[in-house]
Every structure is written in C-alpha cells, then in structure tokens.
Image (cartoon, one colour):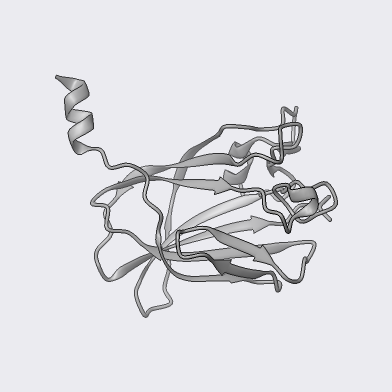
Length: 180
C-alpha cells in the first residue's frame, strides 16, 4: 500500500551537522550544539548568514528553517530590529566538496511557511519571495505572533544525495530595503 511505502522510505527532519556558521557584515552567529544558531553582537542593517553543514540522510528533498524568538531580541521576539521582526529577502543552497571552494548551485522549486504577511505585488511577506534574487521582497511573519517560533520549508527541484565528502552551504540574505 502506498502509505506504507512513503513511511518506509521517509526520514524525519534532521538538523544539519554544523561545520561552520558565518555572517558577512559582522553579526555574531553562535550555534548551540542542537542545530540552533543564535544571532547577537553588531546589528548591521543588512547581512548574509552562511550555514555550512553535513547530513547523513540518504536523500534530501528540502530544507526546513525554524525561526525562534529569544529573550535577547527586541521584546523577546523573532528579530533584533526595532519591530522585533525579521525580513529574509533571499535564500540559496549550494553543494561543495569538503576542503574546496568551488560551489554547485542547488535549485529550490518552491517554499511554504506557517506564517506570512499577506501582501500584494512586490513587498515583504511571502516566503516564495526568497526564491527570486530580488531584495525588494521576501519573507516576514509581521502581523503574526512574533513571540512564537515560525517555520519555512524550501523544496528542492531534484532530490539530493550527499556523499560523505560533501557539504551543504545554506545562505540566508537579509538585504531588505526597509530594514533597520
């Protein structure tokens, strides 16, 4: 039966085995050992976060990004800006051979989130806006409860199988034209 086949071949979400986390513009990114990365320190208006990790999954079909509120954020919310919100303008996934600098782009086909700000036209709100290389739109949960965690899932165009000598590089661009 079909349900059984999916269950037999399915592995639950697993955190990446973090190899490195870095920010381009000075934000301090600190992993906690359980796959959660906390932002602190300088708060530049724009920054790019890069997470390098490995996985033991035989087949990867997507990435799940969880955004958590934290007591050190504005009013204990999701972000450190004046509103306590975040704006994620774009995401990229790349594959590289461990120890080498050459990157292979891995394409996302779609993105969904548990909370999005409803907007018309080009603006900040929808998680699908993170897939278009345009910093004038992207994902925010503004108008939803910023004191609760929220989740986005990015589906790969083609399933990916990592070799033991390969790493994933997930880049999150925070290049809002209105951020603070």
